[in-house]
Image (tube, rainbow, N blue to C red; front, side, top):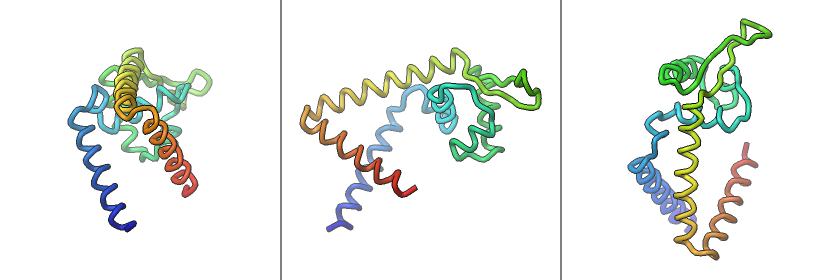
Length: 141
């Protein structure tokens, strides 16, 4: 029974991912770059590239490529630290922050619509189950 349910859940999650990609909002064309922008915005403080690598599990060469691209697009800036000029500080620009905030607003609207469609009882059950899944996944780390 568990194998059948597992297969069914896997299939449904893959279908949801495909649907999500087909109606992707503005940040998604940035692919992995959007993940870095989102993290920087919600991190609450500028970061050094090495910190971003550690926090996001991205290699240094890949992070350098992402930061180069985002900087060219005007979504973030890199500056030398005034206290230690050897250190680089990465900061979101106003355009980068606005892009993440717009994406967040679109996602929240989609989630609110989904929860409304489920109705109060199923929405609460969905949130409870997602919380349980998250706690389980976190316990495995």
